[in-house]
Structure formats: C-alpha cells, structure tokens
Image 1 (cartoon, one colour):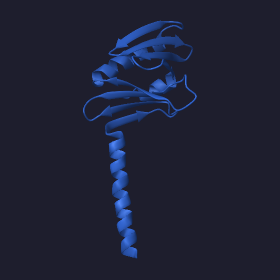
Image 2 (image 1 turned 180 degrees about the vertical axis):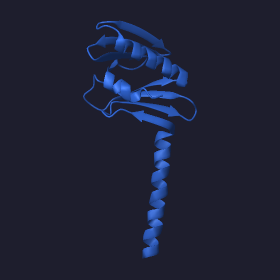
Image 3 (image 1 turned 60 degrees about the horizontal axis):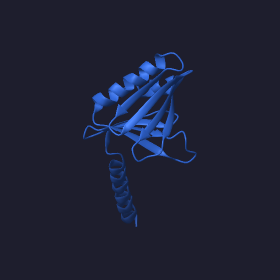
Image 4 (image 1 turned 120 degrees about the horizontal axis):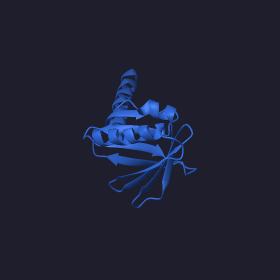
Length: 136
C-alpha cells in the first residue's frame, strides 16, 4: 500500500511539472502585483506583453507579441517617456499588426490598443506598475 501511494505521488509530481513547462514555456516571466500585466520572454526569443483588457468585465487577456528583447525594450522606453510627459500628451506606436496609442494622464499612461482582427483593448499603466516590470 505504501509503495502504491509513493508511486502515485511520483506520477503526480512529474505530470504537474510537465504541465507547468508546457503552459509557460518561457525563460522569464515578470508579473506585477496587481496581476493585470506581465512580460514573458520565451526560449525562442519572442517576448509577450500580456495584459488584462480594461474594457472588459470578464477575463480578457491580450498579448502584444514582440520578436525580441530589443523591440520590447524600445516599447518600454516609449512608455517611460510617456510617464514623464505632461498630462494629455499622446503618442502613437505602430508595430506589426498593432496600433498602440499612449495617452498620458495623472500618475500614469492610458494605453489603447487596436489589433487587426480584434476588438479595441485598453490598459492603464501606473508609475508603480511600470516600476515593477522595468527590470528587463
């Protein structure tokens, strides 16, 4: 009986580990405490900017896929610049199939994303949130 329990525990341990590897498949994942933004760097070099759509009351995670760390760093620098700009300043970023508008507001940046084939999505990025993911 003890051997069977040990064997079943062993199987569960390895199956759970496999599921986590397949689900993330990432080298590095940075997530903010609020839970509505994360950056995932995949083993193939692609970077995912994953966020919860602020226009939805349901769970509606969206991704902006960058081809490498350099592209996501460039995007991060534009967010940094918007955070330090005066209120009401707007900037448009066009990246592949994404049209991203950054609108500066008190204490943060409002990001509006139009992606081909998707409905419009939004995210408010506060200075605190930005500070948590500014570690690439």
